[in-house]
Image 1 (cartoon, rainbow, N blue to C red):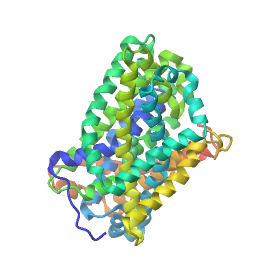
Image 2: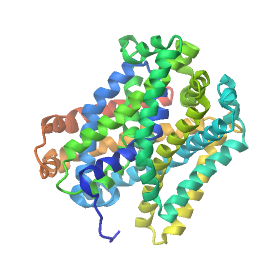
Image 3: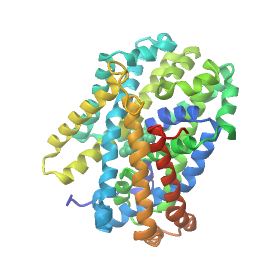
Length: 451
Ligand code: PFF
């Protein structure tokens, strides 16, 4: 793109925009179900440790690469070292894999808004409701298409600024509501305290390499890392804004929201279904558990509706930035107009997302390496491609670009307090850990090892 790059205005502009992209279904839907599945407290501990070391270093590197080159991910890697151009290309593929299935979940959220508004709250609290719903063919497809349709419309009409304005109000409100629901369920739902302990107290006997694999995949997903997004954000960042401080703020914000979402959901799962319920539900956890809490709450239907509306906005801002990324990457490559390009991306998403949606209904028998279609796309992006991108980024920064270059970029806007941690992480610890994780997740997916 030959256009002049605009920058974020004000100190807080960058952090808000990056946090807006970071906070989404990943925090509210994905984090709690992974934490429930992979050992509660031990998952939380591993996640937080990874976030302040590994996530921190990778985010610093990505933002610095973006700010230094002022280019999109593909252009940035190409400009810095031609041999690493493939990293930018691979990173650009990730949003295209995530967006379709993200929209399927977005569709589930819309269905739940309508359910609560339409007085179905109690029916939705029934265990079988969600399974029956995603097991039906047409309705989830319609909601999915509506969600991706709205996303495409926003991108096409260029009204994302308007959506952003709404979400600036919605996001803090969502956090308050999540906190309220968490406190309510701890106080009012019998047996929830046991779940709080499960979530907060690490049980080291539940630790396995899978805890780390899942936590690392979630870190990428939730912080929008290893997919070029932070490089793009960095390319719009002004030189006088501290990269280090911003990264800390995004990190605290993103992890804080995920933590609260876990606190809202996991104790309640425990209370309603006992420990056995934790490992089983997977992606459906939020949709099965929350309606049960709302059902016990005075005015629960209204609160349920408000909650899902807010989640819808968090999901929409994320899906918009995912689609923007896919569209602008494509526009850089092929000379077509923006409308046609958005249309093509929409058609692509409709096809691929339908597969994910049907994977729970008509094609539920069909599995890919033992996974349902949605889980498969989630696995390919989070556990395979993103680790490869992160690994290549770490090796590139550590040994080719050299940490010094990133440190210098960060120091333009002040002292880089944790530069030692950064250098050691990006050069040695990150590559070794990611490689180990990548190998074990591939081997386990193909059933070679059991972890
Ligand atoms: N980080 C988002 C989430 O946690 O839901 C997912 C995401 C949104 C990734 C937007 C990338 C992106 F551009």
